[in-house]
Amino acid sequence: MTHPRLSAPSAPFLPSEALRELSEAARAAGTGQVPDERWTARRFLDGTPAAVAVLDADLRYLYLNDTLAKLNGLPVEEHLGRPMPEVIPGSGPSAEVAREVLRTGLPQTVVFDGRAPDDKVDVPRWWLGAFHRVEGEDGQILGVAAVVMEVTDGIRQRESLRRAQERLELLEETAARVGRTLDAAEACRALTDLLVPRFADYAAVDVLDPEGTRRAPATPVPVRLRRMAVAAAPGTPEPFTPVTRSGEVIFHQASSSMSQVLAGHRPVVLNRPDDDTVRLLAPTRARLERYRALELHSVAYLPLMVGGEPVGAVIVGRRADSPEFTPDDAELLELLTARAATGIGHALRYTHEHETALEMQRAFLATPRIPGPGVEIASRYLPAGRGAEVGGDWFDAVALPSGRTLLVVGDVMGHGVRAAAAMSEYRSLLRALALQGLAPDRLLTEADRTAHALDLDRVATCVLVLLDPAAELAVLATAGHVPPLLVRPGTAPELADLPVGPPLGTGFGGYESRHCPLPPGALLLAYTDGLVERRGEDIDTGLDALTHAPVAAGNALPDILNTVLDRLGPANSEDDVTLLAARTLREPLRPR
Image 1 (cartoon, rainbow, N blue to C red):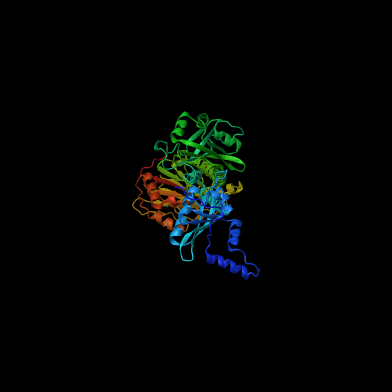
Image 2: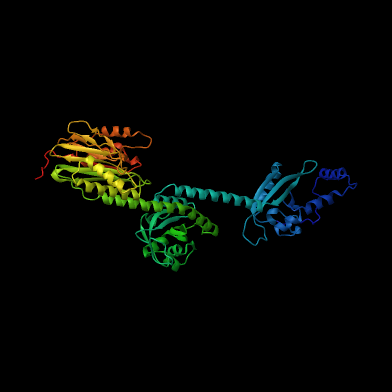
């Protein structure tokens, strides 16, 4: 439908009452002049930097100033007499607000976004529009007036501040989630869980592996890394969820982006790579087929830098209908991985030290132990829970002349590799002294003197039990260690009553032996304090629980160890747990 157009000098649209108010205001100012009302109003509206329009009840333009005409990209004449939606396609939301104001008479102020016709860049802009109904002196609805001001800069500044705040909160969340654990696998999982599905459909963390590529190469070469964590967003095809498993060894070709990132220390972002590039990314043909099945179209590789050197890299991918990575995405991902790298680096160093100490300790404890005749033994070693350092626990059984057996359970103070190394020194020292045939108190005295003379930087507690099945006797002595549990046939378990000497390595000496009858079939359980000691509890509580454990001297030794461990719950212990159970046979073999 064609609407008649009005001439540029449009008909009066201000109510007479409003014009009179303008005149009275001019008189009150004392200018001595009374300007023409229409001329004053037009000069005011035409000169304002705000975009102003008056529409009739059918939303046809009755008036607009040059500011609005320039904003719409059309001359004033192209507006007058035509409905706003016809002149400006896409102005539907503004038209709806205008109709609502016409219907209710209630003014409205709204913010709307869009693009001006002459915008050369496809970037949204925002305007603040104030709409009110225009009525005649008799209450007749004449139309609606609109005043529009662009507020793009203000909204962009506010959005920039909001994004900066969100980014800061996200970086703090990353540091907190990744840095709250010293377990490397858990720290890497925290990062992938943060990235998926918030920023990507797929994420993986590969780290330098002491058994593979130990240091990042200076130039792109084939690298063998350890995949520590992997995550895929909901909806990823089931056969490919995840693409790889945590702990898997990944081999990256020299031409791969991973090798380039580790050598160059810079991120690599690939949006819609061609087939040749994808073939370079995939370590194997099978992996290439998996990537294609996943419909991955964008991949970013970001190094995990610690102290200027990479400890690994993060791979993030987007698939199917997800958007490509923008420069802002890449910048934010780089900040996230940089923040996470410190926590992951600390966890990797700790995990490596923890595993080294654990392997060292297990290597010593795995040494074959063959007791003397008439004695059977069983042992159990449980390292502290994940996140705790390895301690210096050890146990030993030394077969001696005359059919005797020396049992040793000890605990070096402290944790970590140094504690494990000190444990090996004390273990070797006690073995050497035991072969000299010394009584337990003399043996502890010599061990203390020697350790002090050698200036070992760790002291150790230990308990010695010299078993003589033929004499049905046990001789015990302790250096600051928890007392063994004795279970004689037909009697309730009890703790050995021993005089406690100082820990080894102090140089104080002062050890005493205690002789205990030990009939055939008697059970003795030596252990470290990790079994009975808990944070916030008196150690006597744990010792009492041990004496009330359902332990029978005649049960199989492995079953006895399981019963004790189940009853005392060492999984909650912050220290290693070591147990050594020994039982004298009813018919001991006597040495010839």
